Image 1 (cartoon, rainbow, N blue to C red):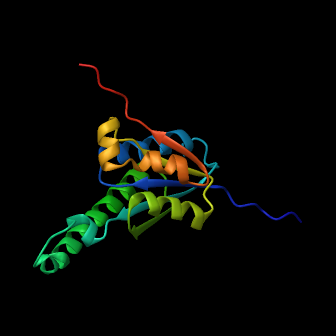
Image 2 (image 1 turned 60 degrees about the vertical axis):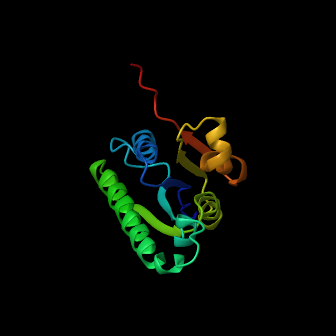
Length: 162
């Protein structure tokens, strides 16, 4: 008897941005339609929660006093991100979803999650930064496209014409 092969894993990076929500919704609508219940992928969602130190940067003297408050806020943000993603998945009749929150820089967290779960595809949203903002802030999607050991799909929101 032949062993049943598991479905490949699609990993989607999620955060509190509209671009992330759009990428998740786009992926669900294109790969997890309820009309074709034999989905081609197993869905994993990963949220990278920044560490309190990276969230505040260099705080100077007395900075350690605010770390517990920053950490509490970061945990609340992570809970909101997860709840929003769960609600979106359930509204699209998608219930077999694994969700993780991992502390660290999003670029490293997503590439590590690809390795850990042996993902076949990574989906990330694009903030649409220009060259200067991308150079200063860094681009998670650009980093993942060059460093993740799987196919990377960068989902861009359509530009709204006025």
